[in-house]
Image 1 (cartoon, rainbow, N blue to C red):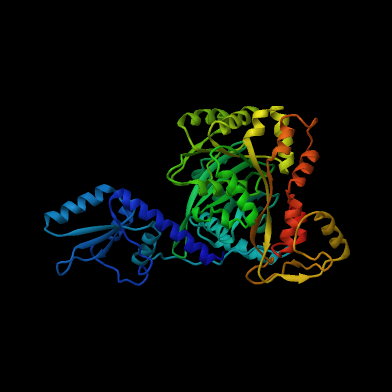
Image 2 (cartoon, rainbow, N blue to C red):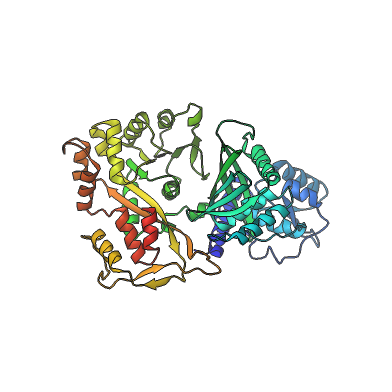
Length: 536
């Protein structure tokens, strides 16, 4: 999906939400996309300051017996609508109000009150050894005005699709790096003065202290407007004191409900069918496993989004809440301040939810509570830190002991990694004999449509649009469907539990490992064999 399609999807999602909101508020919904950039503006009816303050825009002047028409948003005070209605009615004039989306309001306001801004060069990611680009970006960051430099950095990180911004104290300078497609890239080196500006903004926005001698966590949000569409950027802030000063890592979560879709994760039809089969049941336990940054949360949210219908009660317990989803009750659990997922889960079960998502299973109490919930009429989704599905199985059994109830509750485990996806201008090549032997051995016994004696692989080909030859990331999933032979391990019928024995049983049942899934992904030309080796 290219950038234009993403923006259209975001805008469509926002318009759909506004239409639903209009029905609740008793207002007429108006979709302005076909005319918002061309329709003549109605001037001298309202002051621009009032339009900014009360989120209201004139649409039609009441001439020749026509009513006055105004566009409002969900942020417009109800008192403003009531007051204007009375004033116009007292004057014998007709008035109408239409509800528009926040993105539509932004487009109109940019026409009514265009910003007087200096346009700065976009940030570029430097290749290895490219000190000139780093120097240019550093100069740009020094030239951006003090009040805008922090917002500029966030906007540029979002534009590049970065997942993290790292602000790091070195001996003689402050280094800024961004993680794009899972790889950290140097961006700039800034002065101590610029660093103090960044940290001052972080302090006020994320509620953290620049003078603390202890690690801190904070959270902030920022609206990003690009090409007529607005999306919310959730930012988790982690700060830690180092030898030369406070280092900060800003983790960026681009909230886009339209992209929380299983069909957009790049998974195969077979993987999609297994997930659909599992979540179609009213009860059971699904576990996502993998390291930090492997996309577990996005996949869980996508499943939750697919289940989010008016006939289901869905509750999540999260630390922290990364995406806000309408129609779902999301409860923050401050585990750093004494809260626990187990205690929260016991509380929400009294609310009779159909689906519960627990942010992470970290201890015995949470594991047992989640298992109990999953056999008493609840569909439970959670994450767990392990390298593979079989390792997760062994670790949980070690944690809770032999537990027959667990065998009847757990239905599906998914281990996930993210690999960089090759751009369209990739380059085909014939692999060497050692690579062919490796692929043949890894895919032994796996059904596929490739001639392993005449293989074609693909590698990155840098271009102006994609300087590293990659375009985003795609998910690789190892899915273990819990069948009767695997349940025997949990019930203690197979003797000592070990990861290898569980994996061999699952492979006999048709499971493909992360390595095998990654190699097949490379054979399809979606990524490189080197990228599979790096990640898996």
